[in-house]
Image 1 (cartoon, each protein chain N blue to C red):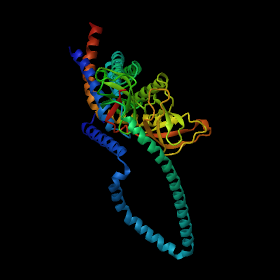
Image 2 (cartoon, chains in turn orange, yellow):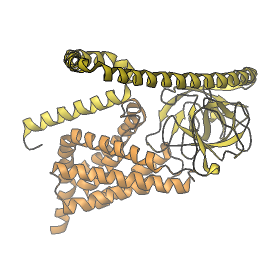
Image 3 (cartoon, chains in turn green, yellow):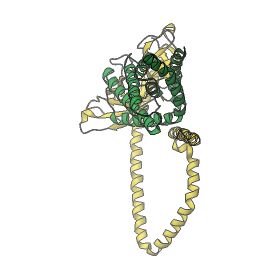
Image 4 (cartoon, rainbow over the protein chains, first blue to last red):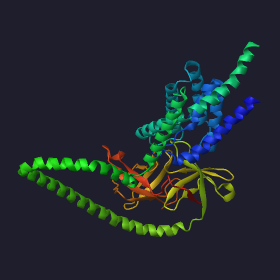
Length: 178
Length: 270
């Protein structure tokens, strides 16, 4: 029951972020560049719920995103899934309490996601000009914005994350030992 | 940072303040905050005045050398003025050419009225920085179909790429995967105009080697290939980039429509 509620909550969060991204951040931007909260969301789900959930939620979020605003289903789906997976791997090897660690993770995840997305899209949608200069400029501002937002909301995420992690991983241990 | 509650809260508040400052500063034009410059000037000016007075006092002893300095300064100034005047002359010539094309456009605007359009609001903009699409509040029920042209009061916006019952997805001309055929207003040469990642920048490529392009020239759709009809305003040429190889040269085009402030659009139905 608790788990179902959490899953529903995590899907609702996606829509909240979607409306933030498509409306609020269109005017609350740094030099015309908006952050990408979906990456942070997928990363933290992987981080607190593990690889499996990270992958699943990433794929679901990506699917919604593609259906809502994208041009072809699948690209962001796969990429967000991979970000979820990365979150799961990091969870096993690093501490979630270190601020620098979290910031670095968000930074790397944003770079991986956006660069991969840009490369895939430039091939699939046949971009005519590949603007490395503009891409780097956009990416740098976006990474900084994402990191700033992570710093601001991290206490909330950490609290919610540990609560959710407790609910999910507790039962894992039970199944393992009984 | 987060273990120490007090310190954590201060850290977060500072970060929020930095974020808000970044957003505000990056979105305000410098001229609109001239009072800020005035305030800083008020602090700096007395010191600067004192320094200048001191400098003049010392330099006054060698008036001969300062005279030469003055003369060369004046010379420099006059040269600059001369080049500015020359530039103004060039601009006037361009304006002359533009005047002729604008007269042509006047006839075109009359043509616009022959299109049947449906007004629409933008309800959602793209969530990503790497593509530029948006969703409008009309769909198949209002008679919208794929590949219909979307315009705004000032010029071309893009075309419909997919439709649902009540909404339609529009790909704008600034999207990196968009390409439109254009003609330059004054010379009639054609080129392909592509979106870059930047909001207010299009790039015209495949310009023929014999073509003459002028800065501030108007650009409109050519009607060749694609789905865009002829004569819809796209924007103005803001810069011409001459590369080593003339076949590679390109022009930067500022779209007529301000995509950041775009809220209502028109969909051409017929």
